Length: 491
Image (spheres, rainbow, N blue to C red):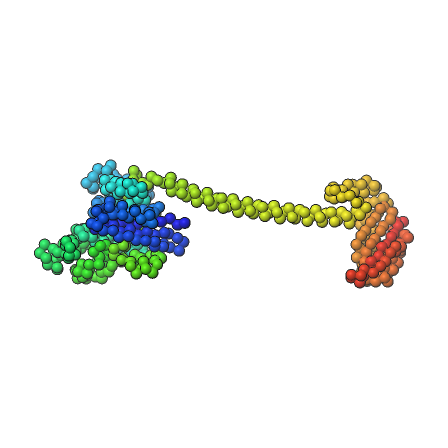
């Protein structure tokens, strides 16, 4: 049975979870859950409500970490080996981050690789990773991957849409937004910004300090534009973004989209990971699907646990410790598979044995029949093969010489003489041939009695035979042929 994968997006206002299974034809959507934090009493209450549903428990959990809690820096290293980069990255980050390197979990993604390697390095405080680790541990689960928020959505969009130009992916929450800046199908930079939107108590409206709608997002949008300008000045982006993709709780807020389109003068659209991925939905789930709200949870669920483009802060002391449980589960499947294979081999062996036994019985019956026909004088048959060997040995002892019989005339000599004397027109079939050293007895079949006389007369002309006589001749009723017995003495 395919293992369940749960993508868990822990946001400012709510947690969103999407559960899928991976198969040969792609992913199959199983279930999604959206739980507001204020209704559940915070993150712990929301997780308790999530894990209370046994169907939402999975073998693999992939959870997001807000970008605002992670230090991100681009750097260039003079080597390409990923293992060496991993060993060096902490020392390279030390002067750039506000924490001692012993108190962070570091990871990186490759931006560009030529003679040198350009990377985007991330340092997550251990206390933040430990908080997520503890939330799962208290609920007897473990996070297989702790990923940076919004990055899985961006990597899915630029990979599956084959976008080569510059694009910007924004995950917008109540107070914080995360931007992933991409160019040429690669992630260049990740930044977090104050979003400048807040939900008013009870009314769901958005206000700024002066309550002027046109200036609500101005600070946020200028911060985004400043980052774009910086990337262009550094030569990282060839041009400004051709499109902006939105996701997150506030992606559907129309005043924000309208203000963004006016400010940047480029198309702004809500991302839909489900539309770009090979995910199988049932009809009801697809109708109720909210891309802006559930994109990140789905992208997390679709993220590979290994060899994926992204970060994983579930490393070192936070690496999943229950690998033995997974191994135990896999061992059960392997054991069951081995048992099936052994049973199949056993059944196949039984069939082979049964077939061989039947075949051996048939061979014994055929040997017995041949022995009875060859040695009709033997009435008590115990081991026909051995008895026939004894008969052959006795016959050899009673004959003189090797390769010839008595007179020095071999069986081949007799057959050669017979074949030479009998004309081709007198065709006959020898069914039995006996030679005791002086007397040759031939049993055969031919087409009529005249042919029998012809055969006898021609053999009588031989200088090897004498007293050639026909001891019997009779019709073979089944085939309308004549059977005869011919006796000849050697001269």
